[in-house]
Image 1 (cartoon, rainbow, N blue to C red):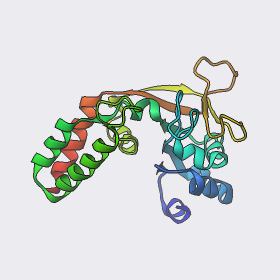
Image 2 (cartoon, rainbow, N blue to C red):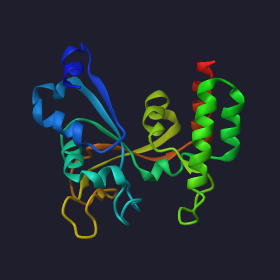
Image 3 (cartoon, rainbow, N blue to C red):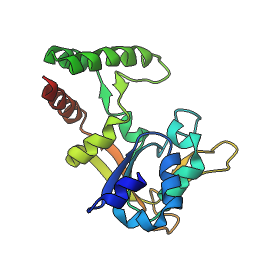
Length: 204
């Protein structure tokens, strides 16, 4: 990443769809490159319930210290948390639509989603379909108008007995801290699915 940033003539957007370990290491090791980063778009966190602990989403829980470094870096952060990814659901009819596109990539995607839909039939989730977490990051970059966002301050709990890894979103501006993140809170599900289908057609 450092090499890419150093060689780029324009600021670069970093998309991080896992724990923030590598991004945090980059920020700490190369402060001179901060100005070369346009924004960091992450899949992780939540304003509400967690999916790995009652309070924490997996990607943040795995390395909360790294996530805190990213959020407090001063670089614009865009957060695609569970609040939006759980609404970006793929239904059975959507997988059939992808399969009908008929190219090798769309066929493989449909088969992978068949498995994902089966996994999310567990009643504990309460889903109609299966949430597509990571694609929300790229979808926001391609068509931000599909998403509803709010500007808020976000911190990460690194030591809580019950809340370690929780992303604390100051929704009502109670801390007095200036917003440091664009937080996705809703998505046009049908528009999201249409975007995925359109992109899969390119592989014909």
